[in-house]
Image (tube, rainbow, N blue to C red; front, side, top):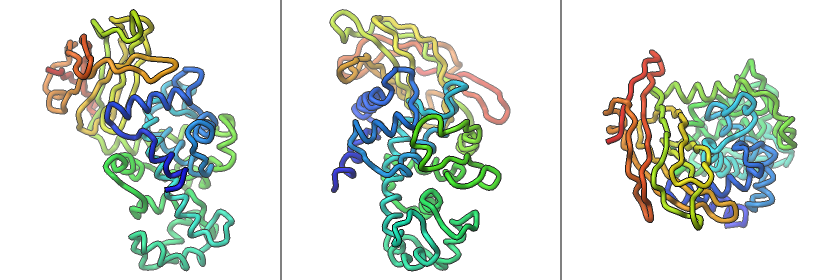
Amino acid sequence: MDALSASLARLPTGKDAQSKRRRIAYFKEVDNNGNGICSLAEIDHACRNKWNIDMAAQAINRAFHAARDMSPPVQDFSDDYIDFSEFRIFLVFLQHYHELHTLFLQLDASGDGRLGVDEFVQAAPLLQSWGVVIEDPVASFRHMDADGGGMVLFDEFAHWALHQGVGTADDERAEALKLLALAKANLASKGLEDMQRAKFSVEEGIQGQGALGKADVGRLLLRGALDACPGMLVVGVHQATGLRIADKTTSDPYAVLSYGDAEQQSKTIKRNLNPIWNETLRFADPGTTLEINIFDYDVQSSDDFLGRVVVDVETLKAGNGHRQRLALVGEGAQGTIDVSFSWQDKRSGARRGYQAK
């Protein structure tokens, strides 16, 4: 395994508590100003200068745009950024698009960054060795070349390869790649009218935030993902009581909520063992358990674990929406957290509550 592949393999993409703590540390390295969002320029800088991931700009760009469009923007201005709720899926996509770009380079015999029909036809045996069944290479090429320009760029190849099952799809990646496959094509080079995607240049986009533009069409991808879900889980994170001391005399607690393949993070309450958040977080419902982890924020070291609660899907749907006080569990945990849950039907808009017991 080369150094780049090793660095990518170390990315904290898992859903276990240790991976979550490491992922928070990675996010803090990108979000230097602490505003909770990261631009493409900041992500690119972190990849190359902090994580030892000096990979192709096209792959970083595609991973960023795919992850950015998976959730609604946290603010009206943040369509051009990713936040913590999208960060895990970005790391998964980073691994995925690096693999596809490595394969793309093997097909690109001329080394000009694009594939002609002759190159693709000649590479058919190699594609078959990856498990891709190609009955008519010319027809497959034309399918990729949606604008009929006679050349296929990396983003077009990556979209085609995703639907052919090319690349690693272990348990940790499978759910994220399924969402990506359900979404609109993650392309940089096609017009909105034809592809229902924004016109982002894979080279210009890496230069900074200004090159990204306003991506209203990004919500189309989220809409596609939500269409596969029966409704929306609405979680009220109210307060915690009696948390343990992690920093000499106090703690700086925040909550990380994990549901399906999505994560969201509450604000950090400084120097308080009884923090009051009163935040409402929403998730497209995949019908899985909800896990809430409480951490103590540390500036110069890994954040400390303060406790967690896990609520299974049957329990989520069984209650009446009232505020509930749940005991925190896990190594060194103490105290409780007050939460509430409600279910919003996507089609009718009807909303009903459910509580954890």
